[in-house]
Length: 530
Image (tube, rainbow, N blue to C red; front, side, top):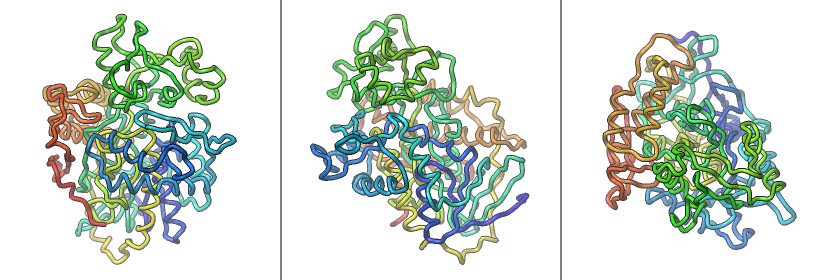
């Protein structure tokens, strides 16, 4: 039994843009809301987002349109994006950004209005930014200081979604920093836990991104989809082959300002690869780098270079202060020497299947932000669409939550889940296996090797490390199962044994967990009805 209990009408797990937006909006209706995070309030993927927010303000953006933004998103999605989700999120984006500005967010502006840049896969300059390359930090700051921010428990690792005998989500169990286990009863649970970059050895994600929401949703019986599509950002600062965990991002906007990718011999990496050259979609650029390195140009196999020396020093310093600082930390002067970069795990395009209001296949359970699969991203996310999705879906979930709370449900007949905990000793090995066999370029043999080796080793010790280890193991196995099932190459899923896209595979792979056993099927997403 839990050591302590509490209650809130709505529990929101995660403090990124989606979770904070949803929590503030729901609290404004008079509903009690409790925010939960295992780290500090601003320790979320949102904080680290450098690039910006892709948004078109209709007639005020000359030479661009929402329709063009929709088209670019669908192209990047490789045939797996949900057209209804794409249209809705991008159309509602301008109003959502206006709402964020009203809450105090400040975006970079010039004499003619907001400054805009272009990133990979975009056909126009439509990405707004803040602090040059500190957009996520500004969004996080504005939401954490916004009026109406509800109460928050920091340093509390959410263990699992609690359901009643009817299968409805009625709360969560949590592990407090003092080691006690608590039960927080609720009428609805919102997962806004962010990404899963730490499934891999190197990632742009902060330490909190360990696939917790994916694992919790699986154990709660929710359907997940498109898990095989982990996007690798092509330009992550390379600081040595043995460096693990979080690595600094070199935002795509640097290429938007004119920087180019070169190999160790000085040859252009993207020459002749794609019509958009260095601003091709991320899956294209990451794969091109990987293929170039396979030939060990100049004797180098683990990184290429981003040549930004053509950008005026004052422009670079003003536009990219975060990148400038990261380069300075490792002794690189981007004004005079190329920046060493390599692909690293960046953004998970798949997640918990939801409708366009964040509802999952489990009653009372919602998912928003990177942990969710709305259908916006498909097989590959278009750059800077994620913050916009978090804003819009946070608002949309909040719009329906207050009227969908079932206060008359039986929250006494609870089905308390077992403590998700396993040995953390094999974490580094598992991440190395995922990088080697489920990264950019996969085949059946490698996926089988990883699946056989990555196993949760139960332990009775309860700590953040052991809970994360259990979640990483389950999320890794789910991603591997989806990658095995997709016998083709599409978007950021590249099967070297099935190098071409298959027209009859333009549908999602769904992963579910029943009695601890993962299963996959193709086609029916098992969506809830709006």
